[in-house]
Image (cartoon, rainbow, N blue to C red):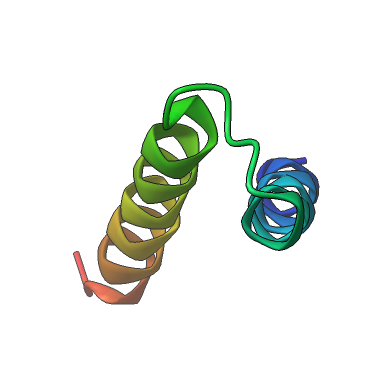
Length: 49
């Protein structure tokens, strides 16, 4: 489900860049948050405990 949210945010971000309407940067902020969450999940998933 996390990857679905990331994919939707990336599509909205690209659409916003193309149409120059990004809702005051909200899409950019959400995209950055989604990328950080994915990176943290990948890092935590690779640790051997």
